[in-house]
Image (spheres, rainbow, N blue to C red):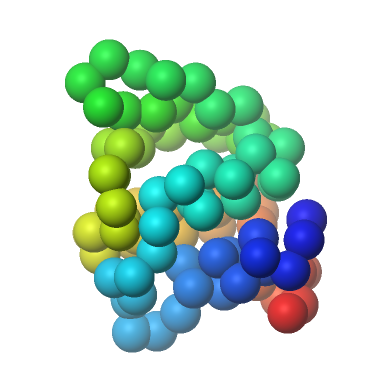
Length: 87
């Protein structure tokens, strides 16, 4: 995982919730973490990581705050924390 991925991970876990995270950065982060990412119908992607699966709406630009919170919860359930990936 490179520095850019770490910055994205820390932005997802930031408080207050960031509304300025590009969806492509999230996709690249998930791939760097070893997740399987597949396109689903209806502008969604399916993600499988560490035995957990989720589907997220493919935002065309910045990820909306509620979606950032869902991604954060998914990563927490998968055992991914920003502390494990310092900047």
